[in-house]
Length: 291
Image (cartoon, rainbow, N blue to C red; front, side, top):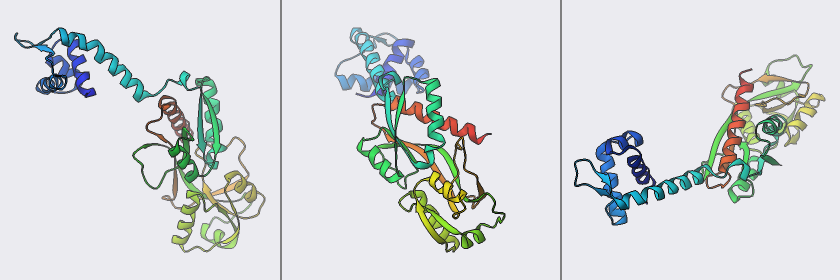
C-alpha cells in the first residue's frame, strides 16, 4: 500500500476537501482524486461518498483514517530510526587522522549535548572499516570517501582536508619538490586509501622520494618529522589536536585533498543516533574551518 496515498487520505481528512489535501501534499486536486481512486481500487472498497457535490469520507473511509495515521507514524519512526535514548551506545570506526582531533572534540560535545549517547571507538584503515560497516559489525565509520558508491550504504561528507607537506619546524626551504627529493621520506601507509592517493600524486609529479619508513598513524608520522627524521605528505586535520606537534606545514596542489566523511548502512536501526552524530561531526568541522 502506497505511503503517499495514505498521506493524501489523512490530508483530506484534516482539510475536508480535495483542494485542501492537494495544497497539503503539493499535488493538484485532480491528482489527489486519482490517488484516492487508486487507493479504493487497491483495497477493493469505496472510501468516499461522491453523491453530493463535494466528496466526503464514508464510514469505511472515516474508520481507515486513524489506522492510516498510525501506519504513517510507524513509517516515520522506521525512517528516523530509534531515538537516542533507545540507542545508548554506538560502535563507530575511525581512521587514525580523526583520532587526535575530530573524535575527541566530538566526544566532548556529546558529553554536553547528548550525555545519554555513548560512543565506542574502533580505530582502523578506511577499507577495513568500510567492510565492518557493510557487515554490520560497526554502526558507522569515519573514513576517506570510498571509490565506489554502494546503494545500501549512506554517506555524509564531514570535511575536505588538503594534503600538505610536513617538515621539521626549523627547515627554511619552501620548495616542496626540492624538499621531497632531498630529505628522507616518511610514507603514509600504502594500505590506506590516502596513502595510495599520495603515491599517485608523487608519480604524477615525477617526484622520486627516498623512503625511510612507512607508518599508518598520523601522530607517529608527526612525531618522526618533529624529531628531524624526515618529511612526509599527510592530510591536514579538519580539527587540529589540542597539542599539535612542532612541525611545519607547506601547502601542495589545491586539488590534492582527502574527503573525510561518515558512512553507515541505510537499514540501520540506529539511524536517528547516527544522523545526530553526522550532524555533530559536520558542525564541528565547519566551525573549525571558519576560525
